[in-house]
Every structure is written in structure tokens, then in C-alpha cells.
Length: 217
Image (cartoon, rainbow, N blue to C red; front, side, top):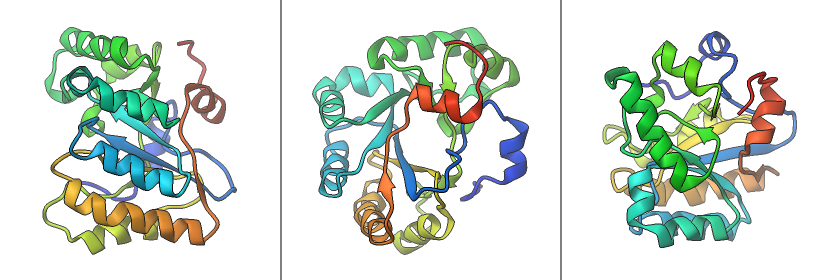
């Protein structure tokens, strides 16, 4: 069970997390979780380049270590990268100290203060600690590209019906999501480009500025 659009009341419960970028400009923030992998990430980069679109890749450290050339291609294309733990750990089922060590392991590889918890799951004490060191980036639109129960058309509709100026949208550059992603991503790029939107990457400074984040990195 997951929500395509993150409700306002949930966003308001965690105001120090970045859920979207407040703006009236036609800008969207595409993000890709779980890569980089050679089977999918290069395809994503190709589609983004066709629309001069920038994005943010929340990388699993183990994949960065296994596929450094793919990770470098993401950087060379001018995209932002973030930390998605080294082993895609679920914060709800991982003890705090091992969880922090796993994140730090990934941080040494990606060199980023942007962090997105896998599954969006953090325990309160984990969030308190991590906010002192990272910008926690969540989302307000979840494409559902990972869900085998929905069609690729529904996945496309999830994004186009819910995204608004400043939305942070989640896709996955993973094997599991690849079939839907290869269909949906170019259509999303074409759809919103025709409506006058641009696509930008997230960065730590913008997250601080836009959310009035008070902690130092």
C-alpha cells in the first residue's frame, strides 16, 4: 500500500523534510532511486538528455561500488546524486547504529548531503540524528513504476495527474521498474515539456533555502 500523492498533513508532520520545492514556476524535480545499474541508468540518462532535463539520483552505495562507470556517467551528465544507504536498508527494521554506519558507507562513495531513506521509512531517533548531517529528501508524487499490479498507462497517469509546479517525483532506475520506466519516462518528459515545464536537479543549498532548514550539515 502506498500513496501516489503525499497528503499535506503528512508533509506538515515532518516540516524539516523536503517534500517539494515551493514555487509557482513550471519546474519539476525528477528523482531516481536504487541505481546506478548498467541495465537501466544509461537509458534514463539518454531520455533526460533528449529534453535537456536534469534530475537527482538517489544511489545505493553497493551499486555505486559495483558500477563506478555508470555512477560517473550520471555525474558527467550534470545530474545531482544523493545517498540511499549502502544496502537499501529499511529504517523501521534496522537498529540505529548499523543504519547510520550503512549510510556513512554510502556517503563516502557519493559525496552528497542529500539523503532519501529507502521506502521513506525512518524512526524518530534516526530522523533526529540524520537531520544534523543530511538534507532528507522525500517526495510528493510517487510514480508507482515499481508496482507490478498497475499498468504502465496508470503509472503515467499517476505522474501527470498529480504533479504540480515544484513537485518532487519518484521513479526507480532498477530492473524491477525498468519496463514501466522505459515507457513512462519519455512520455512524462514530452508531456510536461509541451506544457512549458523544465526539469531541474535538487541540491543541498536549495533544500535548506526552500524549507528554512535550521540544522548545519
